[in-house]
Length: 143
Image (cartoon, rainbow, N blue to C red; front, side, top):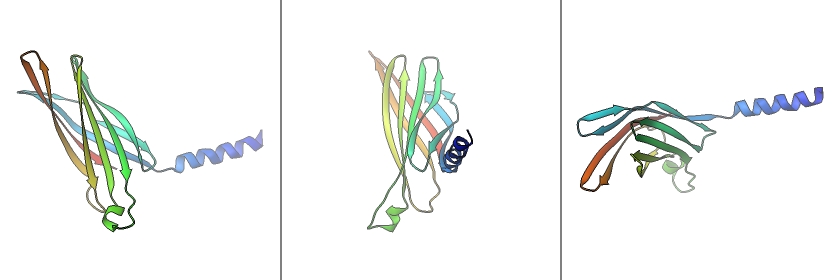
């Protein structure tokens, strides 16, 4: 029994010692004409320094907005500026009454630059002659 405890304890320590990257999404707003709906703040927990996570930003009245956050680093032998770059890719998905659309946005943070971004995307949904235009915006910060 005791010979199993030590390896399990060491495995737990290794698991806890891995760095965790967080991307905090705040100030979520969905605007249609004069109507603004405030969404949920969320945190994407990414194990290690690279990876991805999915977040639900808004889900009410037949309207939902989800995003997938992917964090990647760049290895370059030729450029010290690119060597320290962190790429944050957002796939923003929106669905209104069963009709969906998506947008992909990539932000690049170099070296000691503040790792904060504001994402704003416009979605257009057509139903016959009716056209609804939504603007989705949120702020994100890499921690």
